[in-house]
Length: 283
Image 1: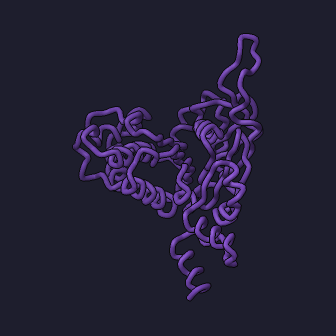
Image 2: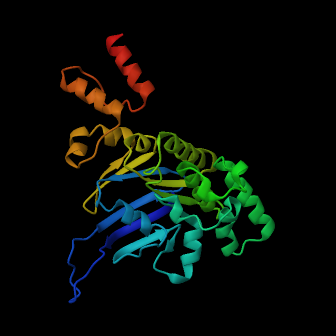
């Protein structure tokens, strides 16, 4: 089993008082997990659960206070490996304006590979390929600030793709987008996972997005409290409700029907699966 990201007893906190003692609980408390290469993993959790803090450890934006994080076998605490770690593990954030640095789309996408010292012909190839992958090639000479939110997010993703990463961590990339923009981003994620074989880690509040993943990790108060395939996690409706999380609408429908006395399975996540279950029961 090839591992992209591994954490061992990862502990992190943001503040300490003057004596050096912690004045808040650990944001991450002894978190140990492995993410296999080429998989699509969704991470869920209420606000303050630690999911975004965990994401920022995956490419050394944050460093552990305790334990270790390795990215493709490289210890994130090793400063000499920092550039290579961030090349191989890219990050896309919630607000694309925080990642766009140039006044022309193609120049923005070229920014990272230029700083990595990539040769000009290869930069041209990467920029064109990245923009085509995210469906923004025809906007290559446009000004980013004139684009819609969804288009800006696609440009931000292209900028990460141009570094030729093996893993991309998406930290709530659809939170500021309308339904159309969300669909566009999820289509790109699907393409990266299933056509390019990129390892994808998605931090999200949208359960329908998480349902598309190979694996779902649920966090609460700095701990991993659930970990499994979407159908294994989302059937635990009452436990998720207690954590302040919801489930896909299909699962909620089947759960309410089951509570009303209709014997139905809860693991039909997609609309088609749910429709079939209902048709078989009532058809």
